Image 1 (tube, rainbow, N blue to C red):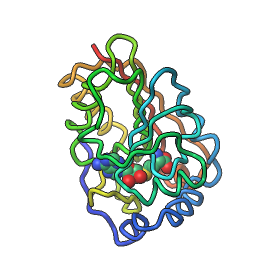
Image 2: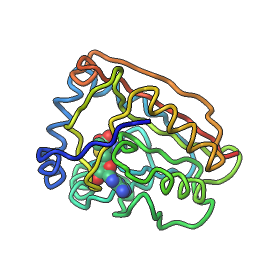
Image 3: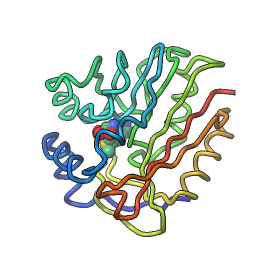
Length: 207
Ligand SMILES: C[S@@+](CC[C@H](N)C(=O)[O-])C[C@H]1O[C@@H](n2cnc3c(N)ncnc32)[C@H](O)[C@@H]1O
């Protein structure tokens, strides 16, 4: 199980400035910026991106609907031409009908959400059956430890280890009737990875 830690003052400042957010991402992912976001799969059909931020992770998912709870981030993403259809919304109450999407992407956002069950319930409700995909791409600590750099609109962030995130996703999948299709761990020579983090991509399908 991941450890819940409080948001730092630095994180709160970043939440208020989309420019500072982009700058932070630039430095944190320095050494693997392009490569890291290329790990996010190209999905087809009707796509929803949850927690798109300023659209850095949206470049791979063309034609997606992008939602985020932070209007400042959406505004910058739109201005920079990174977002297709930005909507200010919470991950917990998606403003879409049942079985709307072929794929939902949650990039770098899972650890910012307090209520994972609400996220999974909404994803299950709005995803089509059978071939639909839920992709969760998240950074995790290779070993145990704290990191307080993350920002979150909810005021809290999770500090997952690899095992912690696996356990969490397995539990959520069982409860909300998803099957884990694949999971892939990646490590680059970026600043964040060299300081003890790696990325995991989970691909889930509704059962
Ligand atoms: C680390 S950022 C990732 C942004 C983008 N995907 C990227 O990779 O640059 C996490 C994002 O999750 C958003 N977020 C946090 N809580 C949320 C919620 N309850 N509903 C929707 N978005 C949320 C934040 O506003 C922030 O933009």
